[in-house]
Length: 406
Image (cartoon, rainbow, N blue to C red; front, side, top):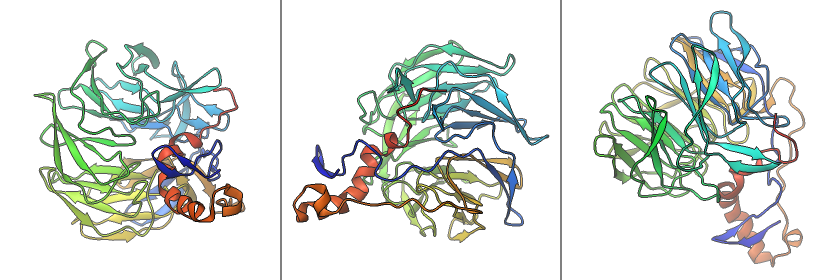
């Protein structure tokens, strides 16, 4: 239904505004030299909104996410030598929209996310570590705050900074905390100036970390100095970003691309991560997409926007985008990682195959007569709601609600 909601005019609904594409188990391999795609091995389970990390030997660990029947606790491991997936140990909690961080020890920290309890969605406070040596998960001290759609990054001293996300009331938070691997404990640290959900955290070359986006308006980024435990703001960014991608180049400049409100917009920082400048727009929209920094400093961005197969590549000089061959499947909420020097692997997500696509789900919006609002208000709600509704409900609406978690 269309209604006047708290905080302004938006589309309020108890069901998705747009149809949710199914979860995918397929993977694709992109050859950066020949601009060609080949089919990769399918995962054991279809999933989206999962987290993936690459170990130093090239093995990839995929954790959780949302599958056909609900949120997943299962994990899978990709062997780069045999190019096959095998089942890993299941986590203690099913979770999606969580973070997974590779620790200096080679273990993996998984924190927070959205889970299910007695058929209801809950924001998780729990954290667990995958112990590589024994191939099993161990619970560690819970975070000080429950959060999902947050961000995490490994600091130069081996600790993990976690910041932002949405709390158990569904509101973006400005809180931050630090995980200490040696003790398995979480330490409180200073909060950001601004609440941020669906943000990115990136560790800079000078050992600081930067929080970018997480809002539907253009704002300053914030830089965290671990030596003082303080945040400082950068200049105001050019565009708003949330559900975007941020990658740091070899020269220290950060490329930020896509996001909910400005899916074709991109920008770049200076080497001090203080000032921002607009980049050319991408051909394809990229929110809920996936990006990889290639060895030659090019930026590869694929998919997003409720299912898109488009690929844009920013040249090494960071001056122009070129379009690459499209993926064979429309994908969003997927992952992309560098498999080797010349190969990118794109994993899972939600979407459809382009080889034999089903009839495209329509994206109907209520008419003025259906909405129950006067025509003028209905028109305003529909136009404003296209932007604001996505920010208000997108993070919840794709999750199956009536099935028990796997």
